[in-house]
Amino acid sequence: IRKTKKKEGGALRAQRASSNVFSNFEQTQIQEFKEAFTLMDQNRDGFIDKEDLKDTYASLGKTNVKDDELDAMLKEASGPINFTMFLNLFGEKLSGTDAEETILNAFKMLDPDGKGKINKEYIKRLLMSQADKMTAEEVDQMFQFASIDAAGNLDYKALSYVITHGEEKEE
Image (cartoon, rainbow, N blue to C red; front, side, top):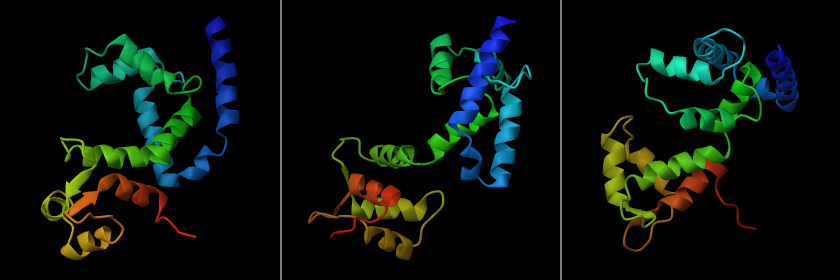
């Protein structure tokens, strides 16, 4: 019985802390998150806890997840993970600061020496030949917002900033 009381208090705190989280998403997105939440809430108590995470991983065929990994996931939330908290976590992941880091990490994979620059022609060839192929026009449009040095190298840290924060406005 003690356990439920603690969860109820946390749920109220979670609700207060994120009451406007629903306005960050389209109705269809909220529905998709609700489905994901329901799939993960294996014991159907309205909260995602360590056992739910273990069961979710097991249902995906991964049975060797360590407790400290699960604890780290749960610690990302500021309280018990009810649906509102779940949405909040995704809201943080899908907006703001994480976007720049995600883009930077993608560029870093193409920069094994960690120089912070990638050859312009190399990145152009990749963007025009892989996955969601870009046209030469689209790549050139992107280069308008990128700083490219005399050697033809793209500063991807600066470009990542522009992509996530908009073009720098000089006064």
